[in-house]
Amino acid sequence: MIELRYVEGEELAGYARARSLAFNNRLNEERLPRLMPVLTAHHCLAAFDGGQIVGTSIDLPLDLTVPGGQIARAVGMTWVGVVPTARRRGVLRAMVERQLSDAREQGVTLAALFSSETTIYGRFGFGPATERMTRASIETNHGAFHRSFHDEGTLEMIEQPEPLGLLREVHEQARVQRPGDVSRHPADWEDLMLHIGSCFKVLHRNADGEPDGYALYDVERRWEDELPRHVADVRELISASDAAHRSLWRFLLDLDLVGEVRVTNRPLDDPIRWLLREHRHFMVQHVSDGMWLAPLDVAAALAERGYLSDGAIRLEVTGVGRFELEAAGGGARCEPTSAAADIELPASSLGSLYLGGVSAETLLAAGRLRELVPGAAARAAELFRAERVPWCSTEF
Image (cartoon, rainbow, N blue to C red; front, side, top):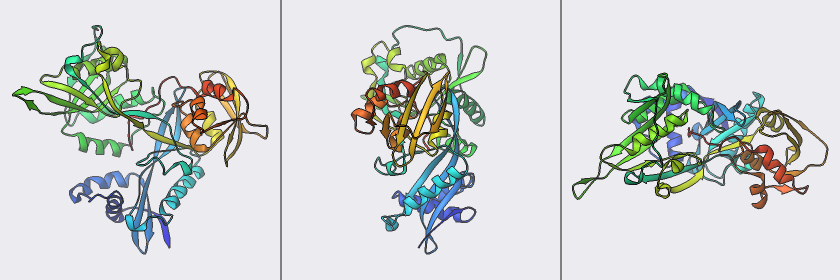
């Protein structure tokens, strides 16, 4: 018999070991004391079988930026795993349904996660809502910009213990500008600093001296025929202004002895390709889904985001209900309705549509949305578009 309950205190060590086992890893026991503050700060749901932890799933509160610059409450789910000997017994389903039920009771309208596999979470109403370049690179000898620019700001290298507050300040500025981005819990910032403590950290300040961008990077030293071909691996690049973005890229491409700059988790609309004189040399090796979303309260979630155009549409969300959405003046109201729907779609497709990362017309062409009234998908595409390509800078 599987028992579900939240754990804390001394049980957290076993919780961390079970999570590692679920992902075929051996927990580094030296890291365990550093994990404890992170786990203590979050809600850790465990599945027990005979007194042993066989499943793990953490839920954490998130402030999610949605189109229109609005902030929505969301629950983030992470560390979802089942130990190999307990699989195919409904453990994962029990944990996820418990967490989603708890979130609904708390009035949370959206759930979010990053998925290790693409076939797991659609059944729970999750759909991929953001995309990202997971691997991209440019050789620095092709890194010239198409035109020079004058930056009235400054760049500086920063070290411990100074960086944390500065990085948080920049991230808070940047995340509210991008649909799909989320807040970071203080414990997660501390954990990040443990992982990137040895990284180089460069901060951009604007003309007024205020921080508005940073990059975290390592340099892999390589020599070929006694010539330097070092590689700069950029762990994170966050900017709250165009000037900071340009300056940080220019800094990275001008690093001495570095022959290649590699980046991970970049938004699909990163302007770097358009900054370059030879844009073809910005090589994207892989694009993947990022954050997945599930609408927990359809009407509230649709009324919570902003809209760039006025309009109305009736949606039938399979197995949930029928809703009428009316947008005007940047806001919207959404209510249940008995009137005939214009389009029909599963909750997972609504999760993908919600941030504007994929259009209703694309979902229609892929068979993930059904048009009940001719032209309705085009109307929905216009209604749900966002001011920027959605992206989440934080994998949780």
